[in-house]
Image (cartoon, rainbow, N blue to C red; front, side, top):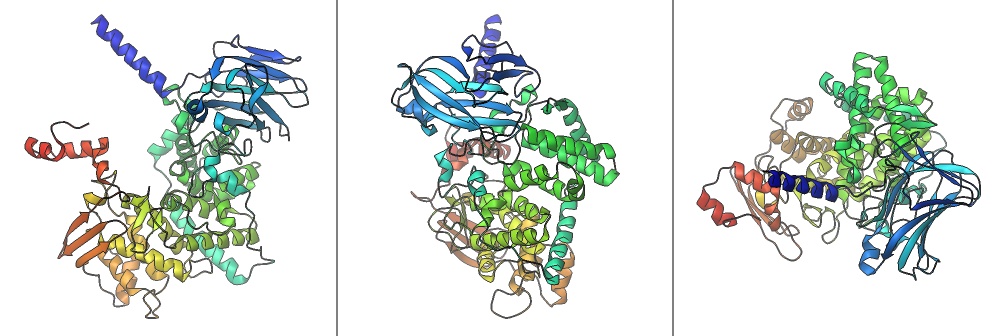
Length: 626
């Protein structure tokens, strides 16, 4: 029994160490390998921390340095590609100065280096791989890290240091502090991690001298529609209680010129067991406190809302910050934006108004829409699904009405032009109406993406900010396709990818049929609405709604289920339909993937719940499942 317990303990330690890298958090003191030079001073501080309860305070003199002795690190090609350094730096004063990091070779000369700009107050991530550093990179055997201070007196705080990081995140994100960090972000196809690159864009749409009465009326109408939509994201007392519990556990309190409390980091480095927070926790608190204030008029909730926002910004969820890596953050921040819209009047009056609005705009990636859509970039479904609503709300939060008009025109143009048929296997809508993500026909990412575009069409209906006819026609082809390969809402296992048993249209997707129908006829009949889309909506929406009553008043009847054989060559799929049943045929080749996804854990769990007979299970998967 003792041997078994020892084995279990070793197993837990092994998995814990593999999940969380060995971080120097300065909880046990300052390592003996750290030496301050040229009159600078190293201290332990509890004023700010990003791990544990204390950090390393460096009081520096002009051009002084920290020397950190390394166990000799020999970088071959593989290690140069995988290894790097990660840490967080707290800066108390905005300046144009930088900390310079130099890796010293065995010959005593700098070989790899990079700069970290001190351009913001608060915690900022410093993550970079050796392959993206500068320097001559001649001496591959590194023996010391030297950090050089600016040419002035000052102090910074360092924490959460991993040196070397043996598996540097492949999605390290360039930001204001390290703008040339990762060449991966400048890939034309990339979607995540490009916010700072897009921040350099300037609007090529001129700002209006003044708005017409029609434009002002249109923006007011859009705001009213957005109000109604955002009200649906207010939460129950139970969820409000969760926000208060989370705030208490976070122990947020003023410290120095910022805050102390539970660290906020990207999910990739979050240690939930240690009480660390990430974007979803910010979202939970902000939505909870906004709901408590707006529903129950609780003044404490309003104060908590702005405390959490200020803390999040101080922790790095801020303008110009990439938080080390920000990939896939869109899924975790969407309700932050609906909460901000509902709290906009309070935000406009708050002293932190500028910081909050700039944070929201930056992280929404609205800046991408200052220029025309970059044709041919990938991951459109992700972008539509997770960041279209944040983009839209950020545009509508712009205070100056002329700048708001400019932002809305840029966003409308971007969406319209992104609704163009994409080539090859990159993401977007194909000429046959199929929707691609991860290089394949993948309806699991279609649902939600189509819904968000549908919402935008609904918000901007009968205004000058609506989508172009060309964009709406492409969008209609995607709705026609999902109607054909879904029976009634669900599509077949063969095209389910990683979600073989849960693929279906949702309520918001069905509403997209209504929104697009109301935007105008696309069949060439010249009618005020698109009758075919309206008929599809009536078939897909069995409940009586204001939209369905309006369509019926026009003499429109629910469409019948699609009949016949539908070929989708891009997705290597065929859909055979008769009466109310459907057969999905799916092929695979070197360009069309999908078959292997049945071997995910999710799929195996779902299949096991179906209680297959043993002989059928074996015929499908063999005697075991790897």
